[in-house]
Image (tube, rainbow, N blue to C red; front, side, top):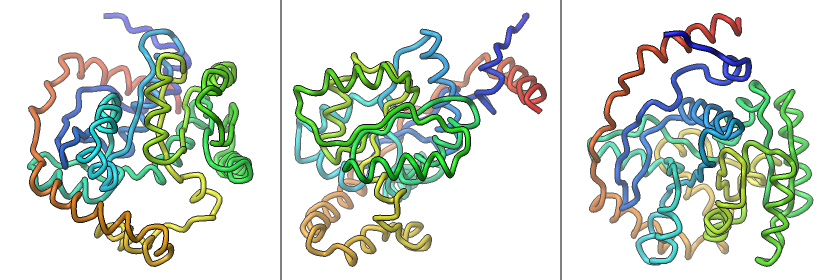
Length: 293
């Protein structure tokens, strides 16, 4: 079989990106068994396919204790959340729950980490990003930090998160006019999920990724917990100590409920079928890698 490889494809995917992957139900939410490298590769592959008109954009949502508890107590939120094309393990408890269920997620893909993975991959492959959300000041500084940290990264545009629902059509037009391949939406829960679902048919970016307060972490306004606390699912405690007035009731209510749901409502799903074309894809990827070098 003759395989034709376009230039953009040679730059895009370092490994078979969209082979079938397993999923697991953790806390009642179906979650992808994907690590950060695999997510980045899938993102690049999907974005180039959307550019060529070969597939529709994907909504990428994040599962953590807050989302699990909210989905269990709010039917509307659950309906919105389940519209996602990919749900990834934003919280370490989700990873731990997948292990209890016997279908382990390889690692946590915290959005605060993945946004850096995505921007690095975008800079390397010529993709562009649009930042939606946060205050005007944080949005501007976040764009500056990312552009400086990842040379070659194209910031197609940005907009703060203060707008009315009737402004959404114009905002989507602005995003589309920018040509952004990846749209990050940081509007807080549940608004960012609702925005994505309402406007999925309007937005033409390859991946639409919810990212909560990530921009504030990038600018340094928020600080991450020490690595050991992240590893042992204690990041919530670090945040609680830093912001007790704002976060006490949130964690007092959501943590016990999320923990109970993860223990009682987590189970594996049927593993994905093997891709019969995987060997041929391996050959193509190896050829891409040689040409890139």
